[in-house]
Image 1: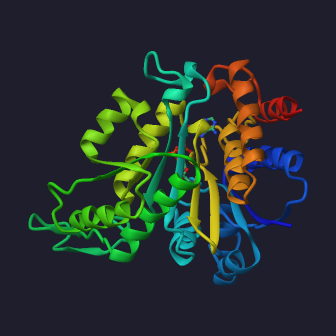
Image 2 (image 1 turned 180 degrees about the horizontal axis):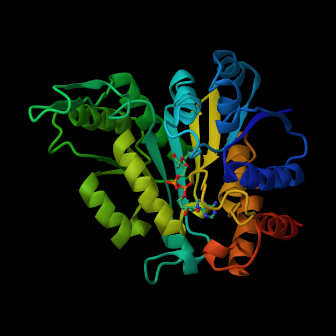
Length: 345
Ligand SMILES: NC(=O)c1ccc[n+]([C@@H]2O[C@H](COP(=O)([O-])OP(=O)(O)OC[C@H]3O[C@@H](n4cnc5c(N)ncnc54)[C@H](O)[C@@H]3O)[C@@H](O)[C@H]2O)c1
């Protein structure tokens, strides 16, 4: 019986996760849950952000973590969010950031004449290295002679394992096109490592057609011809940027879901959007990203059919306009969740 750690977090995280959990209860009634009181409220109450023993429990006792969103204007330092999100990412070594980019309804695509089948690819973003490790420093801060250094970390192990994960996923999911993106023409040391690792792993996967694009060309191509992609693998910084571009192509952050995965160890699934303090508590947040995220979690648990059921139900709601305000509908968060449940039936 798979067990899920639930962290609603802050703001609309509570509202959208409630709908995701209702859908999960309908599709996968055998899952078990434990709710964790972590987030801004808890931090403001007793200073707790992310206890080490909770991280250890995520690793040893749960199959997945289902997270809402983190961020609260009352905690301007965002320390709790950093500890919970980055703490999980780094301490559980969740090195794969898995971001499906799938257009479910052509009306929500900002590109003209693109059909759902034209926007259907996944991005494997390296999640633990690159420019996001915080390694660097400042010298003569605040003076005219100030120097600020941000180091990009690329380890052989880190680069190879994310590339390998992308190839393995492609092979397991019937995909035949895989594109690696870097900036090796300008970043000659770290990205040369990406080039070499990519060629070596590609040589082991003859059934997959590989390509390489510098990231500036990749962004153009994603807009001009998203249909040319099936699987993209890239580093932490570029992945951060191109997955948001991908989210725009699929209809915005209200529909974008993500997984942070260390295969066989731990996995954390979350909608891409934040805690949206501007609409929190109003009952108007779009729960579809959280619901699609729940589907991803089921696929991770080996239940790809259940994920497809959820995707089909969400797609039916989109096509019928049974959506929240920011997608042009009139439904509340709760009613949008109910619409998905009705479509499932
Ligand atoms: N992974 C995360 O937990 C995560 C991601 C991004 C931002 N944040 C945090 O969230 C807080 C707010 O950040 P932000 O405003 O930059 O980003 P945000 O994603 O919370 O909101 C951006 C805009 O999109 C809207 N929006 C977001 N999700 C929506 C949904 N499901 N339905 C309808 N509208 C939605 C919001 O109302 C807002 O206008 C900050 O504290 C930030 O640090 C957290």
